[in-house]
Amino acid sequence: MCYFKYITDGLENVQQKKIFKENKEKTLQREEPCAADSVDSLMAEMPFVDTDIEEECAMHATSELNSKKKRKRTTGRDVEEGIERKKKKNKQHQPNYFVSLPITNPKITGSIQAVQDAIIQKDQRLSKAMVRSGSLHVTMLVMHLSSEEEISIAVGALSDSKVFVDNLLKGKRVDLSFQGIDHFRNQVGFVNLAENDHTTLLKEIAETMKMIFQEKGIMTGEERAFKPHLTFMKLSKSTELRKQVKKIDSSLYEDFKNHYFGDEILHRFDLCSMLKKKQPNGYYYCESSIVFGKSHEADLVKEALRRETQALLPRLNQIKELLTSPEIRTKISKELFEDRHNS
Image (cartoon, rainbow, N blue to C red; front, side, top):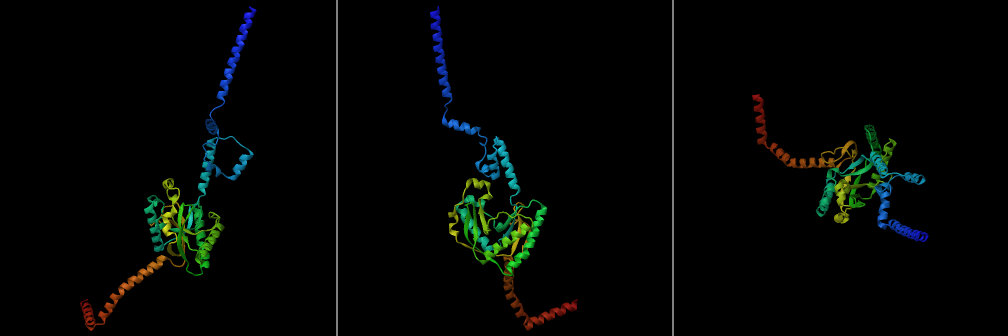
């Protein structure tokens, strides 16, 4: 019996060792999954998996420093809510008003229309990117006005600017020459202002106006140097278009790269709203304007009057010739006498 029990115990130990070995092999197999699955699994557990990298990088630098000092466990929803709050805050301070130098010379607007038509003929999609002729302008400075009170202050600042602009101009006529086409990161197409003394004066006016607005407590956009330009095409005009076209191909306007578009006489600045309904001609809603010198409209009216006068001169000469005739003068005198007698 003892011998039999010894053999039975030995068999049980062997069986237990075998079972233990099999269990250990199964455990090792479970602990060695596919490498790709492992990475995906880890990424799925990361708290920022649903966060856009560009949005996250846009967060303020101080937030990054604080997170390094004290790391907190958070959820993707917390991060998204933080980004939405930041977007909302930024939106509240986005520019919604600007000071505009309107483009009124028909030669410039007509030439730009020709460029736009040529581009659309090559790429129909870009028709949505074109700026209407009535909206063409040069932006002098931008700002955010959040109340009627701030709008009123900005109107006052623009009015105060007139004295300083008049002092800078000193009665001189400023002709701004538009020549050549360039772009901003292939997202915006614009016409350049030729560099000359008049363009330098325009830059000086822009700096003076900026200083006046800031003294009134109106913050006026970026600190980068003022680069006057005339935008005629931009992808940001259509969200749908930006999905279809990532960049504007510069070869589309290659034929107009150095084209001369014409001169604009500096005569008016407008305080315009970016958001309020535009005027019927396509120009922006104006809160206020300052006028100096003379405009292209004044030249057009003067030219129209001259043409009308020239057309009337031959008729006036004919009347003068008739009045010098004795027969006609006698006839007129007789008719006047009879009318007086009858009355």
